Figure 1 (tube, rainbow, N blue to C red):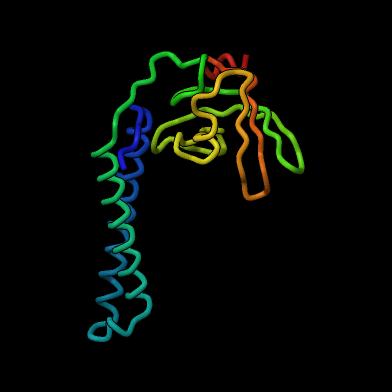
Figure 2: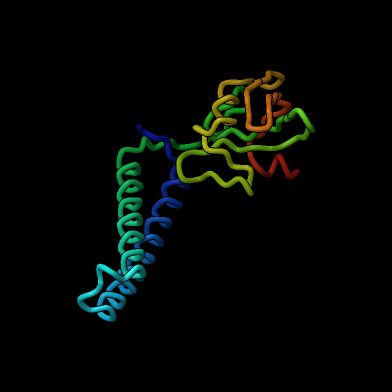
Length: 165
């Protein structure tokens, strides 16, 4: 599957890969030490086996991310769309759940940029998918783990400065 990624997302993904490769190097060093300490009984050593499994998992994950990045469609966000929700849009939503209602501001972002603490939603996430294409005043209703949710687009912003201002 091809993903959409912005230049900012690309930088974040490259940084993540670099950090993972450093962690992998440390893991391999630990594995070598464990191998040396256990000698011929390495196959019976649970610590060595765990390190070996962790190494394979991390190496595979790095390869998957690198492949995804190599196949990604690069998208430049010049000016944000304030007419309808798209990649790069910043929207104020009225979020209505069975137990409560709240207003939230979300930014729809590309691959590698999502961060729920900063209200950045990956465009392929369930909530973002339901918001894409909507205009101010329109509503999306969909199922969530806590029941049916309804999100109404109250306002669209041209940047985070507008949200804070």
